[in-house]
Length: 141
Image 1 (cartoon, one colour):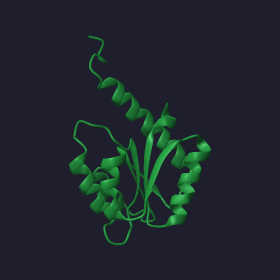
Image 2 (cartoon, one colour; image 1 turned 120 degrees about the horizontal axis):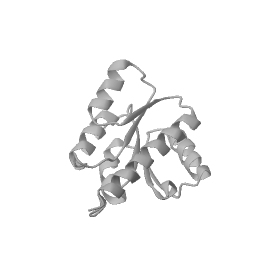
Image 3 (cartoon, one colour; image 1 turned 45 degrees about the vertical axis):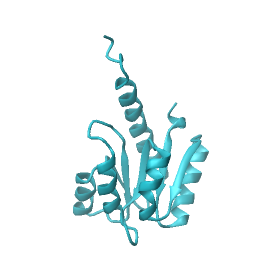
């Protein structure tokens, strides 16, 4: 089930993290972890093995763009693991840069919670299809 997916939330503002955690919990998601600093994302990613990452781009220190670059080196090219960029910067250059660095979707802040949830569901369904199809014997042979 999509609700078993592991969600990694990255945002430097605790209020934003709490909002997303509450949204996920109310929706029935059971497995999520949050990180407040860009420096802590890669260790959490390696340990937690998320199915989706919700990533704030504008953070002090190691920002979301640097995190995207680090994660891109750890996610094999043939693996579908969605990263959603969350940011108040809705400019075209920001969106293009995030997508070029590997983000699969882009949600601008302040975000509509229903829209964010729908995008999470959509990306997780695609991830689950990818995982199902990438299992040996999944091609029906």
